Structure formats: C-alpha cells, structure tokens
Image 1: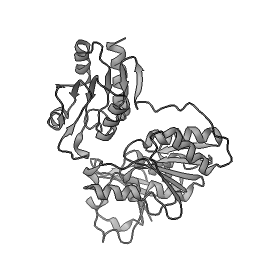
Image 2 (image 1 turned 90 degrees about the vertical axis):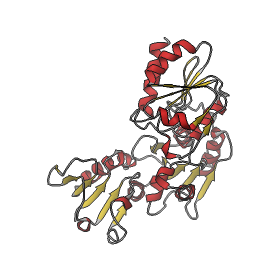
Image 3 (image 1 turned 180 degrees about the vertical axis):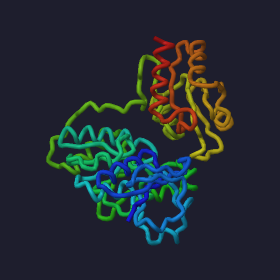
Length: 358
C-alpha cells in the first residue's frame, strides 16, 4: 500500500530520500504544487488529495497543520509518522534532545563539541542537518535540536536525555496560545529519563555538567567553545552579526549580552509572536528595513527609529551616521519575505560590511 508525504520542504525531501532508499512507493502532497505532477511509477506529486483512505501511512513535516487538510475521522485508520519517530526506530545512538525558545542551537553546538572531544557525537535536527539524512550514522551520541513543531508530532518519546534551555512566548501563529506552545515543548520530558532545565547562565558549565552525567569517568576538559555563525558573531571591529535572532527574546538577549548602545538593524516578519508592542532599550538608534518595515515600525517602541527600503539602503545610511557607533544586526524576527532564511540574511549583512566598510 502506498504512503503519503505531506509537505515538501527540507523535512519532506528527507522523507522522500528515506523512502526511495527503502524502495517504498509513495505520493507527495504539497499545496504549493501547481497541479498533479507524474514523477515515475513510484512517486506522484499532488496539489490536493481526494482519497486519503488509500494510504496506510502518512509522513508529516513539522510545520504542517494536518487539521487544515483532513478531519480526525479521515485519519482514524492511518498511521502518522514524524521524522523523530523514524529516527527513534532506525538509529541506535544515545539520543539527547535539546529544545527551548532561545539558545538551543548554541547549546547543541557546544554540547556536540564537548562530546566529540571525549567520545563521538553528531549535531542534528533544527541546527541544519535533517535527521533522516544521518539516520545511519555510527556516532555514540546524537545531539538533536528539536522544535515545538517536531515535538507536537512525535508519537512516542525515546530520548535518552533531554535539555530545556528556556520557554518563552513564541510561535503563537502556529500554536495559537502560550499554553499550547509550552505543552509541545514539555513533551521532550520522557518518563523515567533525566531532563536538565538550564538555570546556569554559562552554557559552558552546563555542558560539562551534562557530559559528566552521561560520561562520569571522563576527565573534565577546558575547551575553547566555538560559537555558531550568525549568532553574536563579531565580523570586524564595530559590527556584530546576530542574524540567528528570530524572536524578540533573542534580540533582547543580544542587547543585554553585549551591553549594546549603538545602532540596531531590524527586519523580518513579526506575526509569529503576536505582540502588540515591543519596547527596546539600549540602542541609540534603530534602522528598520525590508518588506515588513511598516508593520514593524508600528510595533517597535523607541525614541529614534528610521525606516529604510532594504539592507543595501540601510548600509548607505550607515555610511553617513555610523561614526564611532557599533552596529548590531539582530532582526528579532523570522526572515518573512525579505530572505529565504537567517543564513542568507547573515551572509548578506557580512557582504555589505565588506563592501561599505572595508
């Protein structure tokens, strides 16, 4: 019996590669397809699905709301499978799940660096490498960054250990309210397994504490942790690239961490947090740019805001007003219509710094 993949983004494509490797027949549904596209005898793509009952299994991408397409009754006899479910079934490593509103990517990176020194480890998940593309890895540890979307769709929890960095308001456009969002995050806590709730402001010390918990006989190391690209990345004197900032909490953390009082650059789509206003203190001036600039201008409360068309126009303005001020690029929002992702906008910022301030 054929299976169905719902959603054809990063995870949907990893489902496709996984099923092709297993020689299984499947169809792909994504409303972005313009029409029914015949691929080959094993794969067909649809922009709509009329007969859901012909499928025994549905492989569903994290960001998809399946209730938008099918009722509970229609899904009663169908097994819903997430990328986490497949990874739990197929991979035998010790699985460490890390979630939280902010800091999870950094913590995954730090923990993976440390475990790679004392054993063997791989960083997976939201940090950039799809789970299913590394389902056959032979490392001892899998350090997995997990989103609220993934946790919501996880059938059973088989994490051997879990970490929660923090839980603050985020993704209300998907979860509708904070309680739903928090409930999804807390699903990472497995029965009879250890969950670390981070309270230490030093991720380095928390990493050592967790490593000592799972490898109690190892000699504690003092290593130089390398931060992620585009997370408080100092690219040259006076310029900080924090493109990884995709919500208001990470933006405020960046201002606090750097004791920042220079010029702040913001952009992106603010709708996921549903805040009515955002008070920003610290920066002497804020430049807001991009296709969501008017919406952001209405929400941001600050004594000196200037609105610009795009990132290039922002750098034209910085040439005039920067003087001795530092510049922090911390968008505080997902990219929306401005860029494909935080990596693309981070690269664009670095390129403009080189072009305008070489």
